[in-house]
Length: 270
Image (cartoon, rainbow, N blue to C red; front, side):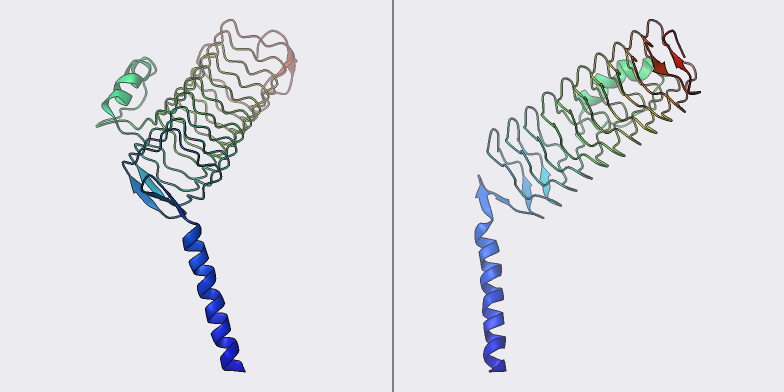
């Protein structure tokens, strides 16, 4: 009887394993499963909703306009992969690598970097091109997006806790209610970005470019604004308790009922 049970258990286990293998689908030569490895595949516009691709290596892929809603991309290596226009609503990109090494990335940042005395990026800079991607509600905890091009990107409600966005370009991006706590935003550009009700607690915004940014109801508690430019930024009802301001430019900023670093409320300037 015991021998029979052992055989039965082995048989059932084998069936489960085979079932798992059978369920892993292939899309244009790329097996969609965790820990997979795909290179130079064109999945432009493909439906990859809910795909489980954590810890996968997806180098030099074309994922433009792909539907990756709810996909599990934790710790995935997406270096040199094109995600422009992809829908990553609710996707989990915790710890994902999104570097894109190009000469253009270096050139694109050269003007801003020189103007703000940014560190040298020799021999090249990382800069994932994610223009127009939809990261609404996505989990980007700890993601490395240094030098990324995130112009006009949808990041409303996204979790970017502890992410690296050094020198990233978020001009015109929607970061409403996004969690940017403890995020490295040194030299990042937020020109005309929407940061309404965003959590910037303990974020490093040193030398960040926040010209005309909307920070209404944002709470950059204990954030570092050393050398940051807040020209014409809207800080209405923003809570800046404990924030650090040194140097930079705040000309024309709106401070209506903003809470200053020392806890006082102002409508003039902190």
